[in-house]
Structure formats: structure tokens, C-alpha cells
Length: 186
Ligand code: SF4
Image 1 (cartoon, rainbow, N blue to C red):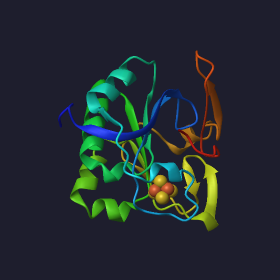
Image 2: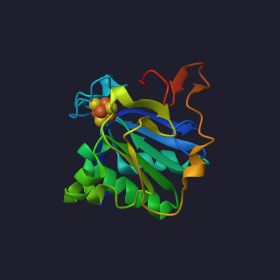
Image 3: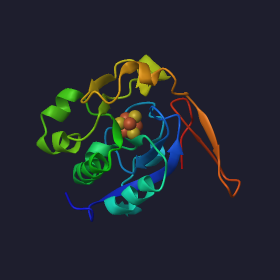
């Protein structure tokens, strides 16, 4: 997959503790057509125009002492080529990959492009957000979402220590709030 592939981006945090095990670069992609009622991040639904190439994202990841990357959104699997290319690059770099998606495992397995997109993911958290089953913990927005452990890199106990919320204060004083109970980002 080409490093020139790109993703429409909503936000990137180079080091986060509230989006998976260890410190992780977290990428919120821009664009989602799934329309879950009560979505936590409606600002990510429109297609948007801000792009970053896979090479640019890998360079950010390489510059940080991180365990891996979490892709969320927006809907990562509506940009399958870029996600597949990023996943391949992360695998080559020895970094882990977690993808949070609104598509169910069955929907992913039924669509070759989506299946290719998760080929190098270690964990996929799959399924629509359901407001009536709201959870907001261990990377699941609602209780119907399923864990698809694709490698042995992570196990469920790795999610126990992931905080539900974090506040990151940048060197310039800007404040970013993220995590499963955070309102939105960006
Ligand atoms: S898939 Fe995620 S971003 Fe898309 S509408 Fe559902 S909760 Fe929101």
C-alpha cells in the first residue's frame, strides 16, 4: 500500500492515554455516513477537506515513544484504502493498531475493502453506537459493540487501566479533552 495514500482527518493527538493500552497516537478521521442516534462526535460526520498522507501520520507516530495508534472518528472504514496503508506501515514499524468502527464484524467481513482495511489491526471494536445501551468505557461507547481480537498483542485486561477521560495541556497552553466520556474533540 502506498505511503501517498491519505486520510481525511478531524484531529490527531500524538500521545493519548485514554484511547487504548499505553500511550497511543490517536487519529479521529473525518466523515461518517452511519448516523447513529446520539453520536458523541457529530462534528466528524461531514466529509471535510483536511487530509494527511499516510507518510505524514507515520512520521508523527515515529517521533513519539508510543505503544501504538488508535483510529476512530468519524468512520475509519469509509476510507478503507488509507486505513489499510496506515495499518501496513504501523505493522512494519512494530506499532499496535486499534480501530474503533461503527460497522459490525459481519459487515466488515462481507466487504472486501473493509476487510483489507482491518488486515493489520490488532483489535477492532465494532458495531453501531446504541444510545439505549450507552456504556462509555473500555473503548466501547455502548454495550452492543464487540471486541474482535485479531492478534495476541492486546488482551481484555489491557483495557482495564485505560482512563475514560484525559485532559492534555499542550506546551502552548491549549487544552484537549479526550476519552470515552469526553464530550467531543476538535
Ligand atoms: S459510527 Fe461513530 S461517528 Fe459514525 S454516527 Fe455512529 S457513533 Fe457517530
